Length: 240
Image (tube, rainbow, N blue to C red; front, side, top):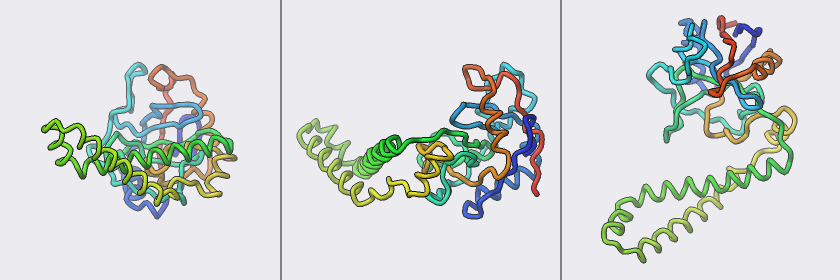
């Protein structure tokens, strides 16, 4: 990936074949040539692939341009995670966490202490309970609506407490999902990254040469919409 700030060499993962093949398809079609890194946030990530960004006026707000389809999520955690240099698929909010067809981001991130990692694991446990509870609510929606229409608040509270209890029990069985492996912890403590994005956005490759280019890009001045004040161009992407 030749950028106006210098070259970045990426490798794609075979364990994420849908994202790998889609990215290669777009590269062969020349889709990325001339597009911008339209969103840059220091200590977080740099994002590109908005198909409307080519030759976009400097004052134009970018980020919504895509190709009209999505790629199914492919999470391969903990083997692949949001360490610095990770190539990941951007996406809009959707229950399936399906990826944007063209937009991607490269992680810059930050390093984390042991205490910060422990706190994140606790947050992940809380999020797991909430996720299971939300699913149980969906499954019991007919019963919930029936109680709501009847105005039976007592039975509604009993059902709510029952679902909370079930969610907590299920989360306890699955608590290992919220624990980072020692390898992942070490990477986040030394290399850095964005661990709070794991299992929410597909990681399908990584930078093998050019991390210093990522650092140059992430230090670029930006406006309030995180767009660089000076265009940072993806001049060409080629397959080695």
